[in-house]
Amino acid sequence: MPGGSSRQLIAHGLGGLSDLPVRLSYVLIAAVVVLVVSFAILGLAWRTPRFRGDDSGAPLPRWLAGIVESPITRGTVVTLALAFTAWLTFAAFFGENLVVNPVFGSVYSLLWVGLVPAALLFGPIYRLCNPLRWIHRGGCLLVRRDPARGLVEYPDWLGMWPAALGLFSFTWLELVNPDYSTSLPVVRSWFLGLAVIVVAFAVVFGDRAFENVDPFEVYSSLVARLSPFGRRTDGVLVIRNPLENLSGLVAAAGTAAVVSVLFGSTAFDGFHDSIHWLRFTDRFGAHDVLLNSIGLLGFCGAVLASFCAASALMGKVGEIHRRHLPRLFAHSLVPIVVGYVAAHYLTFFVAIGIETIQQLGDPLSRGWTLTSFASGMDPFAIYGHPTAIGIIKVICVVVGHVLAVIAAHDRAVALLPARKAVIGQLPMLVLMVVYTLAGLALLFSS
Amino acid sequence: MTRLARPATLLAVGVLMMLSLFGCSDDSDSPDSADQTGTVMVTITEQDGQIEADSDLVQAKTGQQIMFMVTSDAADEIHVHSEPEHEFEVKPGPEQMFTFTVDTPGTVEVESHVLDTTILKLEIS
Image (tube, rainbow over all chains, first blue to last red; front, top):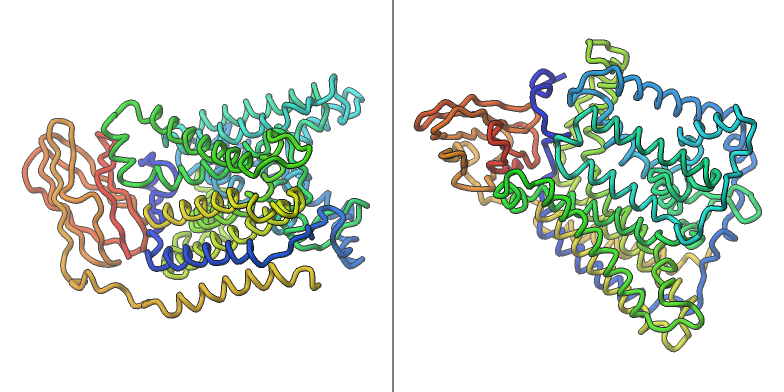
């Protein structure tokens, strides 16, 4: 592996190399398209709601549904996922505390970024594979308890707030200081802590806790709402318009916070690499963890606050309490998040993903070559195509934005009285334009 | 599938618009750094625990020679986080020269290992 020896000496987080700034001309073109298409949708699109949520979709062909539902397929996928988890646990406890330990690339690239394409392609697959669910299920089997039953009912007011907190804590671990993010004891403790907390929630509240508390499952299930596959209300596996899938998302308390953390933290990731922020934090020397924490919290908080404000500005909506409006529109932010995440992490995912596969063959850093099939691949080859990368990134952001605006529009005409339908959704539209332009500005400037 | 027609059309129009505009925009590489064969010089000064370069953001082409001219009052180690990486041993003294090239396009951080700070970023295109 080129540079392998020096990488062991340098503790600098993963991926010292990052993308070139997207060209100004691309950013300007994208900004114009965003503005034109946004207001075109507002003016031209339908006035009665069209998306039917989980009632929508055409059944998958019988043979395909058969394969997906078959216990053999599911058993194989789960076995592979659990074996992978076991392998990583092995590397985490017996491997060396070096940047080349596959744990880091697996966590920050394969898991954190990879769950997005996995959910887009296969739907809520993390839910099926979630190792913590299987630990809980195994424990329940031992003590002969129904995993669905807890000691008390999961409280509705708590909703997805625990997951929002968990996601914030993960992005904090990743972004606030490279000494934490690439320290094996720190990462190991973080995941042990997460496992204990999530499983404890499941014991107390039954396995409904996972879909509200486990940050990775919550993230994956949100993104899965943008996949063309899903299950209809009658339980049939269907293929459908991703926007109809998205409109079926039943948001709980805290869903808006989850989406805000995902968007805010990704934006902060782009921002905190800029030379100005680096210079600024360097000036305060020992306080960089504090400054980065404030920055991360500020970004996530600003997204949540502005989103709640825009929802409230939509006006009085029949009998619905203003307080519930953010969660009724939370689903519409998901495409913006996914588009921006795709743009932000594209090269990182490919490069660090390939490097991690190479490292996974040598979990204890002893020179094993179990994944030698990947050793001929150059992880950083993708950086050789900066123009194509720039165009793909900008298209991801714009497509995400357009889908978000359509999703919000459909929800607005469903909720708002007809004469207020256009005016009422203006605040949300303006906010989405602001988010997207901010995302483009970050891609341009860092 | 008429119910999908509108959003699908809008999306397609948007993407096509962008693609056509990208096509129109001048895609030839910007001619601002015409001296592709010349060496990019960066002066770096370390004094009293502060390290600074004459520019925070330095642009260069892949394969172009980059030279750091370092004046320092302490021993340090400068890391260039390119792929592959470069490391330079700095001794106390004036005008030490380090020359290297970067072959992979991207943004690269240059750090002082001892002071644990970012000195500058290289934009390699």
